[in-house]
Length: 115
Image 1 (cartoon, rainbow, N blue to C red):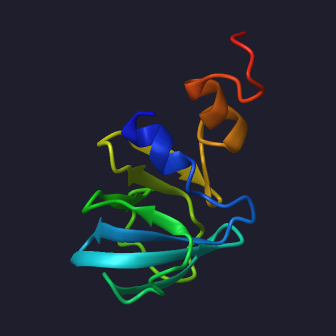
Image 2 (image 1 turned 180 degrees about the vertical axis):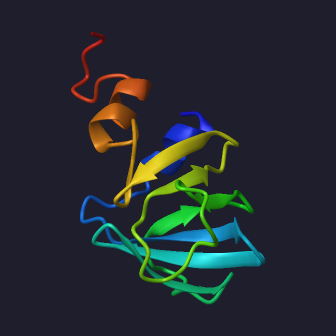
């Protein structure tokens, strides 16, 4: 499994997760995404250690509209640079081309067949 696929597989289906070690406008933060919105930004390493999420390892997170810094309360419409270096669009807290079905398609079928 390549790094971007591995990263995408860590996003829980309920849409509540952390983008950990994300580089935003003025440093590294852990960003809470919940219900399609940015719910919180805390200094990197201060999110719960066992909470679901992606470690971006310093990958950039920027607003899609390019208008100002990422802030709590904003819609989670973001450009996210994943752990493998690939930048993907996140709209309303969901990575485009990054849903569970898409991630499974990238690594092949999970039913044991070789379709």
